[in-house]
Length: 208
Image (cartoon, rainbow, N blue to C red):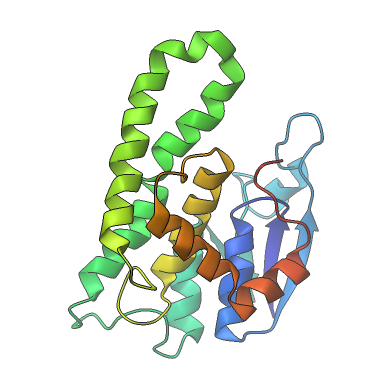
């Protein structure tokens, strides 16, 4: 049985969604953020030294980091679903978006999140952050266009990765100028598997 060590309002929600899309059985081991610090509890360190979520256990295997978990689950249980073949023209695009989601795209999001707590002290950084938001989310908005998915004609691991990035950006007000991304996010949220993951995972609100 796959166990998802699931922290509320975190990246582990995307893992529940992936498991629902793949139709796999899994168990949720829930964790709650500290009400004061909003950090994960120390008990997560018993599963992985970093004490971060998501982490999954699958038999005697422990896998941490969203991208690694997404790729592991698709390669192990996807049965050729949700990832292009390596000889496919879409393979490099999928590879790019899988890494971009938690690489370049998340940097302005995280900077926004942290500088919000600095008040006026953050003023010198804001123009640079705003520039990077326009750069990266403008890039994604144009690359997506009117297509339903970032890669090919069906949902892939790249969409699982990117959706969290867009959810985090929206919670900070960064998507209002990017209509393609807003439309895409609404469509991902409307998927039956996404809704099932929400039901199982509990309240999910990155604005809290």
